[in-house]
Length: 286
Image (tube, rainbow, N blue to C red; front, side):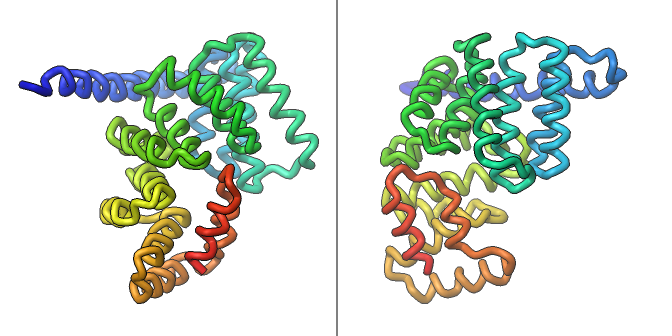
């Protein structure tokens, strides 16, 4: 009974997350059933987001096509511009798009500016702008938009996760890891995922960065298939705990399951504000 109000808040949060997901899925299925020429801007937006979360070259190209149609149907749809900026970032980051850097930056910046001109108080736009600026390592801007989105909707797991990741990358890993755990509890299986491995891997990295190596290993027990950064967090935690033999075992497992990847190169893709944090992580997994 002492915690009755906290329990009530937790139930409300979980119901909200579940309902929003079901409503969006229902709208997407309705959009897919309609002929292309009759789709509204919002329905094109939903389809673009659906393709975006396939995390593939075909998904990115289809997402950009749908988002362009969304903008054509309604030039004042702020979210369509914001999601296009996000899809462009995904495409360049994964090597699916081959624009030169200046052209890419110009495209993304124009999408961002248009989204802000139309509606600078759309929490979805602010969430995406946090991610885009994180990609460009403009941490001040990323913080501004991430905090703004979080203040607007602190129970959206995507906002909580994105802002938590930013805090981990900018030297506030204790607070950031708490938010990553909250995102996992709100919605273990994030948009575009089929299991909780991504959310758990994010917590593992946060725990490593804040120096709680045991917590990193505890969350590792929940993961089905680790992504490379989760592997790096686990291996670095083992080395930090002087468990060299266990570290060698994990390095071999990683090499056996990811023979086409170099762990240090995967770490290089992280956007830490303090470059020494990245270098330490690379040294520990070497």
